[in-house]
Image (cartoon, helix red, strand yellow):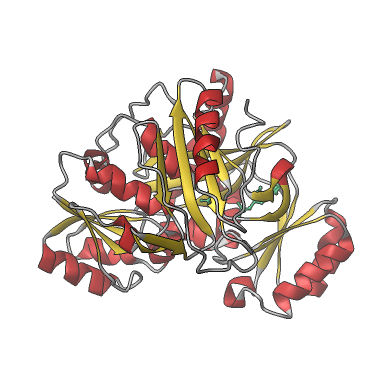
Length: 417
Ligand code: AMP
Ligand code: GLY
């Protein structure tokens, strides 16, 4: 079958490279993709990724049988509904389900309604609102833009002054436009983070290998929030904790998805903080994590052509984890996440091996001269029999691919180790 993948980041590069290996898949078309993704089986085309009608017409005329939507923006725009209405099998929730990520207010109210543990919160839409609610919370304060902000709409503020300045930026300077007209003020949750990602058909959830992202730019979780600077997995949790997450978080979430008639058939990413009081949901994402996917897919033995096709039809294929451990380190551009400086030449990249490979995230140019074309540029992934081995191998490759000005964290996986 021919598969269309929507997106252009490291997550999508991992998806298309995984689909390339599927015996079920004859061709992978990616939109927009990147020139450096192309291979015998992979091609790129520029289509308007939030226009379901155009995507559906393309699938019909090119005999594409399956669409896998990588990022959240097309899902929130409702492309999965439109594609399905044309009979194109699609991985990803419809517009209503995508609100779980598309609106923090919607998702917090959903959690409240269905008894999913999460931080106490209030909805705010002005600096005055924030000032009048602040006494209900203790520092540090968390302020989150309601809408999509590419992972940058969350402020963690140590003091009231910082909080009010952030609210001013959000509501009076509109730095996230409409996405920041409304926001959530919520209680900070101390603990450790876990990306609980799985296949979801609205009735059941099939967990994928568990992973831990590193969201802050700098070592020791300092500096600004980013889309994610590196990830390790699988995390082998105590069975009691898994049971608690399944019963306290996954079950009520599924109940909510069913009760709200959301057509899901996609990936559900539950961002958890494991606190002393148990797991708390920080956020839902309605798609694969980036960079989590870059290690999750290589940590499974399944044929993902089959997994995605079945998922698009509401069937969950049991996931077969491999026995490996994996580390992904993101090599980011100078200036990221504030303003990535594009154009720097990348060094020649080492050839991929079974145990070490590189996904292209913000990469431009052609194979003979790749250049920086985004914030998170390269995703270096390595596998090993232990996390330590995977980590050492990964940083070994990272050293070969750095350029002047590039940024990495040197402590990916250190906490888990
Ligand atoms: P979000 O976009 O909601 O996932 O938030 C981005 C990051 O901010 C999360 O991955 C956490 O590291 C941090 N964060 C968000 N909300 C909270 C919270 N209530 N308590 C502690 N950290 C948080
Ligand atoms: N890695 C975090 C995310 O994909 O939202």
